[in-house]
Image (cartoon, rainbow, N blue to C red; front, top):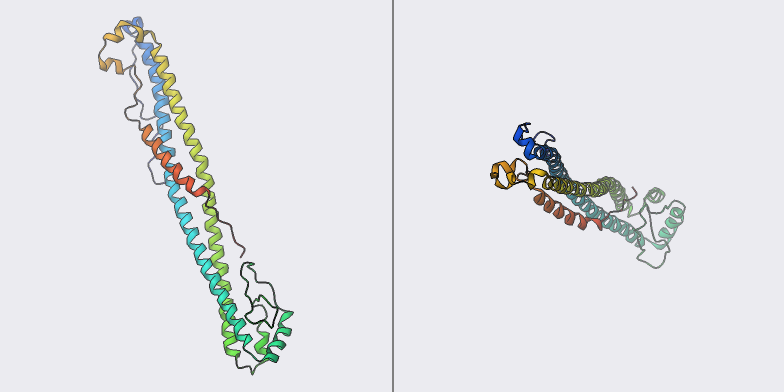
Length: 275
């Protein structure tokens, strides 16, 4: 990922705790010890939040890219389908204009060779009512110009067949690209949903550490003493958890924005295609 990770256990805000007589009597040394323990864990919990939210944020960029790419390739395939359909219709119409006996002879020859069009959603309907053949495939259709070399439509017929074969190859390539893009999209979708749950858990850990540490400090003898009440703000800060540099709410809001964005993708699934 492109972001700079926040280090763990390096940015510690430790207050020196000397075992002086006054600190022992007032209980301030114990308060400093508790404060330092929880401050380390709180800083680490904050670093974990920053790192995982940045990680998810970078991941969402990849999810967006995978979705856009899948959409683009899907539209390309739909355009190829339409072009292929038009080619098959052109072939049907061309043959329908042939002399009736030649057409019937060709249909008899071709019936044994015709295969189903690989993509079931593309069916070419015969324009004329005098045949019951509804779909065609290139297959061995070149038999027709071979069998009838003098046919006036031979060149046009061969041109359309070559165009169909080329279009079939284009479709296979586009479907392969599309399936790869869909695979990436589905991977990112599931992957980052799991990491959002992990991020939410890290927010919960941070809150637990902060509440527990604050409660223990509040219950310390030093907090209840007159020494604490009369001490300076600087002295009080030595036994207070420092969250000034933490931006927990900011990263929580960022995570909520990502969650809303992710929810828009949950209903947007793609189905891989045969190629």
